[in-house]
Image (tube, rainbow, N blue to C red; front, side, top):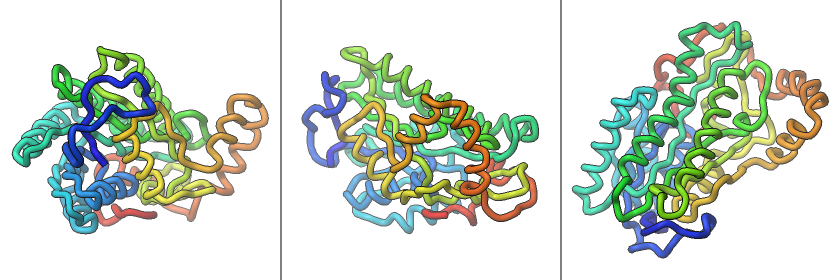
Amino acid sequence: MSLRTRGPSRDWGRSAPSAHPGGGAVLVTGASSGIGLAVVTLLRTAGHDVVLASRSAEALERAVDVSEGEGAALPVVADVSSAAEVRDLFDRAAEWATGRGRALTGVVHCPAVLAYGRVEDVPDEVLDHALAVSLGGAVNVARTALRHWSGRDEVGSLVVVGSLLGEVTVPGMGAYATAKWGVHGLVRTLQQENRGRAARARVSLVVPGGVDTPVYEQAGTYLGRHGSPPPPVVSPHRVARAAVRCLERPRRRVSVGPANSLTRLGFLLVPPVYDLLVGPLARALALGRRADDGPGNVLAPVPEKERLRG
C-alpha cells in the first residue's frame, strides 16, 4: 500500500499513481483503543510509520506494544478537543516523519466519547465536553491537516470515522448523535471545498454501525445502564480495513455494517414507524447491565478500559 498521491484526481474512487510504496507516514487519532488501535495495527503490519495520538500515555504505550510491526511508531499524548494540542501534535508528527525521510501524507481520525441519557439529563459539563471531543476534535484535526498540506506538492488523505448515528437518531444517545451529525456535515463540506485544483486533501468518511469496541463500556451514562453495541456487530478490524483502503483509494462515503442501509432507509422513508420502534429496540438491544450514573471517560481517559475490543 502506498500513501503518497500527487495532484488532484478526477475520479474520487481512484487514487493517482503513487510515488513509491510506503512513502508516507500516517497520523492516527484515537489510536489507543478500538477502531483507532486496529488501524494502527494494520498500518504497522504493512510497514508504514505511524504517529499514535490519544489522551492517555499509559494506553498509548500499550498500543505501541500490541500493534508491533515493521513500521515505526511515535506515541503522542494529545487531546483533540484542544486546537493548540492538535497543532503541536501535527508539528511533532511532521518533524518525526521528516527525520525518517518521509512526509506526513495520511490522517485517520477516530476518537469519540459517548454519554447516554436524555438530552436534558446529561450534565452541562459532560454534554459540552462530549461535543468538544467528538465534534470539536474532528474540526480541529481536519483544519490542521488541511493547513499542513496547503501549498505542498502532495494531496493528503484525510479519513474520518463517523457513525451510523451521524445519519439516524436514537433516543438516549442525543449527545453522540448531535456530534456525529455535525461530523458528517463537516466532512461533506470539506469534500465540496477540496475538489479539482483547489484540493488540499482527499476526504473520506467511514460510517460504521455497531462495532465491538470498548466505547460503550467506557461511556458516561445517565440512564442507569451501560450501553452495548447494537446488532449486527462488526469487528474493529473490519472498520479499520475500510479506513486504510480509503487512505490509498479515497471514497466519499464507505458504510460498514450489514444493517446500515436498511436502518437509514427506515429513518428517511418511514419516520413515524422508525420513531415508534427505535426506542423499544434500543432498550432491548443497545443497553447492557445496570450501572451507576457518571461521566465515564468523557471528561478524562480511563486507561485500564482502553483495548481493541469491548
